[in-house]
Length: 439
Image (cartoon, rainbow, N blue to C red; front, side):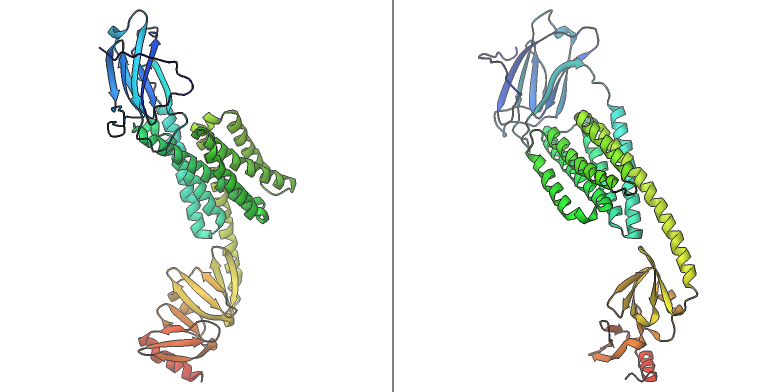
C-alpha cells in the first residue's frame, strides 16, 4: 500500500521543496493511445512516486533533513505499466525534498507531467549546439593566432567572445547530453548567467573600441554595473536574458551613433545586432536555449574572415615596405606585428635577443620589437655593432665605458642600461674599445 495523505491543501504558486520534506497528491487521467508513458519529475529535488498505491520508483532518497536525503537526478522518468491504470481517479503521490541545493532557485520544480516514454530525443538540438560550439572554438583559436601575430586588442576580445559563447553552448546542452544530480543544476545556471554576462561585456568592449573608443571608459563602466545588476532579477532565465539585452542594447546604441557618423562597417553591424536584439526580446527563452549560439557564430565567423583577409593585405604591404627599404643602407627595417618602420642605425644603442624576435633599444628610450633572429641580424650590421653576449649586440658609438664587478663585466651605455659581456667575448670587446679609443 502507498502512503495515505491527510490534511491536503491546494498548492498555491510554485512547488518548492527546498529546505523541507514535501508530499504531493494529484488525480491524473490516463493518456489516450497504447504507447508507453511515464511520469516525469524535472526539478531540483529527490523524489519517490506512487501511482494508485503502487511504488513507481525513487530518484535519490527524499528525507526530512540533509543527513537523511540522498540527492537525485535533475530529470527523472518513472515508467508506468498499463496494468497500474484505473478507469478513473488515478491518484499520484509524490514525496520530495531538496536539502542539497547549492543555489536557491525561484522555480525549483520545472515540471511534473505524464508523457510518452521515452522522452523524445533531443539529439538534433545537441548536434546544433555542438556544431555551433565547434565553430566558435575554431573562431576563438583563429582570433588568438591573429592576436599572436598582430598584438591587437580587438583580436583578443573577439577570441574571448568566441570562447565564452562556445563554453555556453556546451553548458546549455549539458541537460540533454548527460544526467546530473540536482545540486549541479544550480551551478549550471550560475555558469550560464556568468558566461552570458561576460559575452555582453566583451561585445560592448569590441563595438565601443571599434566605433567609439573615446567613450570606452564610461560606457564599459556603465555596462559592467548594469550587467552585474541583472543578478538581482528573479529567476535565472530572466537574469540571463537581461544580461544579454544589456550588452546588445549598449552595442546597438553605439553602432547607431557610428551610422550617424557614417563610419565604415557601422550599418552592417547595427543591422545584425538589431536583429539579434529583436529576436531576444520576442523569443527570450528560445534565444537563450539555442539561437544565441547561432547568432554569436554568425557574428564572429564573418569577422574572423575579415581579419584573415586584412592580415593578408597587411603582409603584402609589409613586403612592399621591406623591398623599398633595401636601398637605404643607413636604416634598419623593423618588421613587427604593427607593421614596418625604419630605424636609423645611428640611433640604435643595443639589440637584445628574445627567441625569434629582437628588441631594439633606441637612444630616445623607445624599444622596438623586430621579427628577426640575432644571429642573422649580426651579419647585416656595420662594424660599429659588436656581439658582446649570446643575447646582445652593442653599438660601440654609444658606449661610455667598461665596468668590472667581481668576475663579471658590463658594458656601460650612454642612453641605455648596462649590457652583460660574456667571458669569452671580453677580449674582443676590449680590443674594439681600444681601437676606438673609448677606454
